[in-house]
Image 1: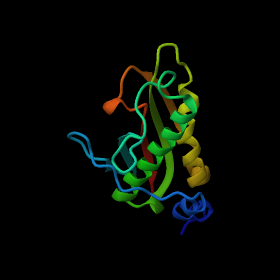
Image 2: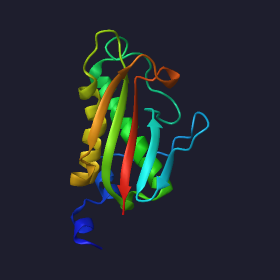
Image 3: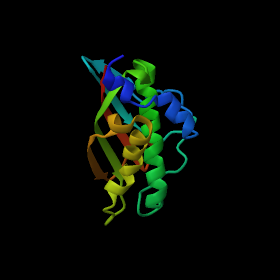
Image 4: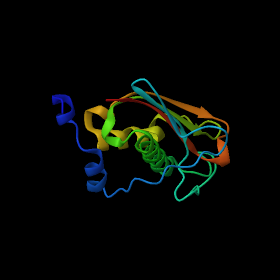
Length: 159
């Protein structure tokens, strides 16, 4: 084990400490796979905040969905992304979360997308420590699949 790997928190242990269970990989809703490896990177398809195959809430952030609830949903998206990585290569192989792109179905005039996507960013930091720090985009959109309030996609470097 490299010194760098020894400095990283154990992601499964951190999930347990946080009282979180890694969900099952969310099955694709269309013609794609949850994650694909290319070289030392895993590209995770956009993850909705599905819990047991269901969206806990639908609608636009800033209208039907309060921003704090949307932040929690972004956290669930990140958990689903970790499950996709685990299903493909294993959580222990995560060297770095490289890039997070978050999409927020936004009501007219809502500009708090960065705060919403912090839910995903903060989860990656809590679970992976320094390896969870990443570049990011937070984008407001008119609609998301299934009328989901948020969607998160991730690029992960693996060891």
